Length: 243
Image (tube, rainbow, N blue to C red; front, side):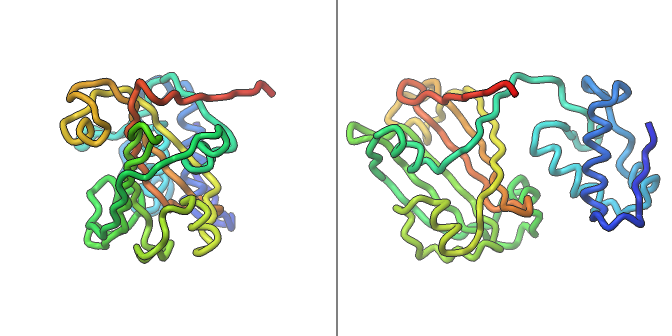
């Protein structure tokens, strides 16, 4: 496989590098869990900086297409069962569409220093504070989901917003941050003491855990969202259409 990019092409180098990596993932030489070339060597071969290459690598790591282990290297992720849903909505809009009235049991807004994962996703310095929004939500009978959202400082949220409004309505109408792309990871896990207390469960109870990565029209990250759902109260439905 020819590993090169066109430096005369007006397309940004990090996007060209990303496209090259996507093609490498499909190539039998690297598919099925094989390691990619060393990051230093690959950047040198492509005549780009390591930061530019890492920008592209990080995106594919967050999409679950690549896995990276410090001191070992980056390799193509093993094939996994995954589903995608089109026309995603905010939680409030999803529930309204189903005729379910949602109650907010808790709502907390704070400014925090991001951990390494969040800083890398937003591509910001770990000493740059981000807005953290925590919401415990459910029906009148009780809560069934606990959300934690982090927002890129670029969006401009102040923490004074009325977060009882649909979240993406606030982002779009108040800050012109249009959430265009959502990528999700869904898994089953057991509730620790903190989550169990929030969702009124016994520690160790099964829950549905969802990570959502939200991007704007320019595919810039705007939200990193974690959702913890009671497994006995929520079903995640995916609709697929063959084209």
